[in-house]
Amino acid sequence: MFFKRFNDGRMTIVIVYIDNTILTGDDTGEVERMKVLATEFEVKDLGQMRYFLGMEVARSRKGISISQRKYVLDLLTEIGMLGCKPSDTPIKARK
Picture (cartoon, rainbow, N blue to C red):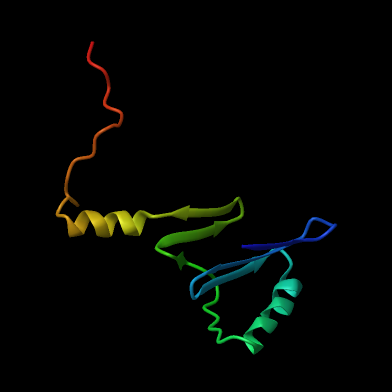
């Protein structure tokens, strides 16, 4: 993970995991300048990020949220527990 923070508070972030890379920041001009990496490496721009390493990524005006909902649903389906009734954890104590 590489952070480039500017004096005025702007930030650019590059995250690399094996052959997956995220390039993001709050200054679109700086993000475009960082795309020079595409001249040195094979890069495929997938646009707005929706999934990364099995995590669902959603953006709103309030910020960014990360969820593993799809992973959990796939896992429950795989082990035959998708229709099971959920229960509170930790289990409520008996009185």
